[in-house]
Image (cartoon, rainbow, N blue to C red; front, side, top):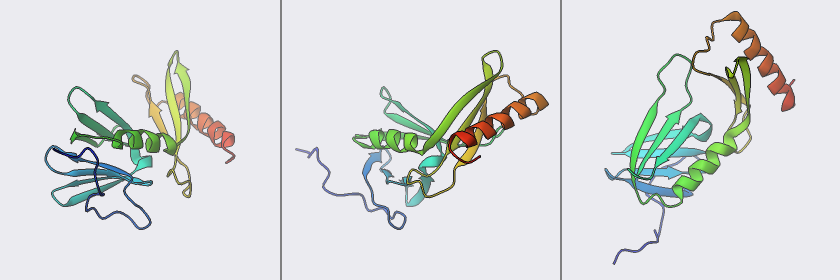
Length: 167
């Protein structure tokens, strides 16, 4: 009979001061693990470290047991995504949700054309020891090159920075 409890963390090298808080195997015998600071993906000995503040979204499909991790990107560029087929994700999904949420300092949508507009997002490492990184996400159909959009985004950023005490 297989034990439902895992006795130890996987043999995975993580950053200094980090320890694995939750982990699981991928169907191709890789490892997906989370620490306080980052998500680690080890497939065939190649380890990818993804700081939580660089995870734009993590979507779990319970029907297919696939976790899609989308990274923060730049407007107009293809976003990096990892589709991971997991076996028994256990607490890892809860950790992913908690850590990604903890990295968001502020998120504000500013309408520009009806409901369409720009979202100003402030993110930083969940441990709070890094400066806030500011990002814009534009709704479909909003042109970031339009001077009116640039002005609205800049004004929204000034207001957001003020709201977190950085004005």
